[in-house]
Image (cartoon, rainbow, N blue to C red; front, side, top):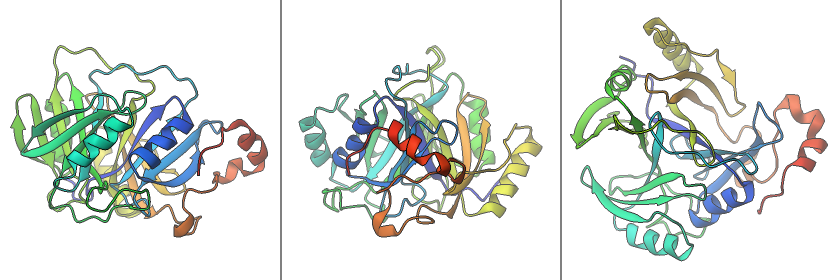
Length: 310
């Protein structure tokens, strides 16, 4: 069993409108845009990162906004719900705020002893705010939301699968422990993790397969401290039979990827070097940062990208 993984690093999804996406996360949800860059494989498309003050691993939601991308179809073989942590008693504030902004899919429920508020992002993205009295992570409050309500980061995520057995075995190998089950959902946690250390597996044996598009999670990334830990994880996964990519430099972290038995794309990302490697902390996410190979084409790339609000 691995012990290098401490929880989530980031979750990356797709959107159909960059301006709308930016406004939703920075205004409606009050997160900080910690990086404005481009898709490494398609530089005509933004890659936007939102999180806490410094983009702490476990707080970062990222997006590829492909203009006018067809909306995805929910189903199995995907991350169906991205879960954020908020303070105890904050859901009333959030329900009123989201309703006032016309956010769809609002619904309250309770799961695993915690109060929850489910809602949809602009592209039908599945999100949940979960009250957690024990989360001591510092929130980003410059977005205009008070500390007693602001998002702390992720709790975790819920994967929707036809059959959860093989993915449950994989999570166990990655250091997660089975906590409890409620109905068709089984919870796995990393003891002493980074706060974003919960994965729920939802068994839906008769559901249709998901079709990726706007509102779909592209991949979910798990955090390791550094490159040495990542090499250990990569070797262990490959020795177990997984097809794992070579290490890829993503400027703000190093990444490896592999496809899980249930079809979800997993990434293992390093906490180093972080989002302040090329910007002062006070000005994260303000200017367009480009991978070095695209810098000679900056004028052309900037002319193609739609301007975002500050």
